[in-house]
Length: 358
Image 1 (cartoon, rainbow, N blue to C red):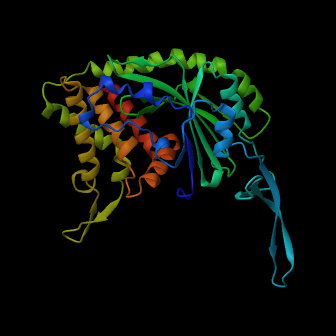
Image 2 (image 1 turned 45 degrees about the horizontal axis):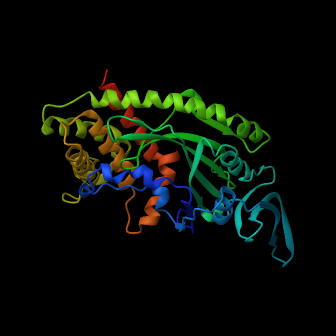
């Protein structure tokens, strides 16, 4: 899987200014206030006169995919058609997007545009990200007037991420995710039964577009459930920082347990040994602990479980897969948060934290 293809990110309708509400927060603490989708490619300059249609067109998201036959030369130099496969091509640029079986049904991105156009009074278009030369698309929308606060100046936004692909990597679907606007931490994918809409590339898409307002209405109500969960974490406080760091370290071990599977060759003894949290995940622990200290300093409160959870989510949202090229790292994290290990680890951390509230 190549994450390093040219990518476009459109923040034309980003609500960054009201999202950040910087005047309420203490900037010297150095919190990151951009999501990975805002870092992982070229940005189309904001223009107050641009329409939703233009935003989709400028990224190339609406370039129609077309099916083309595939020919290869045999040993005699003759062109031979591959009967069971086809190449899906961007009809405007001519770039190949994928090679798929003849039976693969392609669904273009027009329905995603229709969702935002028809529901612009209740859904903000925040950004559009194309991956792998346009074969995958991620479009983020924030539900309007639905943000809720865990405490004063600590709002959570329910975001819908619309996903489609021309390479078979994703079905056409929408995923619900909670984001903490203070630092753009992903707070967990919402896995309650009504929080996913998934369609195969078939005729069900129109019903999806038509029924979305009801889906969004339910999301508004369900966000209150998430807020109560975060408040429950906040109510679990610790006597001192030492106690909270002990709990945080145990939570970190649970969240990162997949990284502790297997063995490594010890740098000092040169012998094979089981992976160890302190020796092999020292960088991850340093990031988690540093962000926990920032978190507690910023709000000038006694440490609590909610601070622990945010230190964990910050590490997975902003620090995991850190490489010299910020764009490459952001691309890997964005997909991993939506459909990979980073998202799964945050979900696990949330589950472990909620268990401590009971």
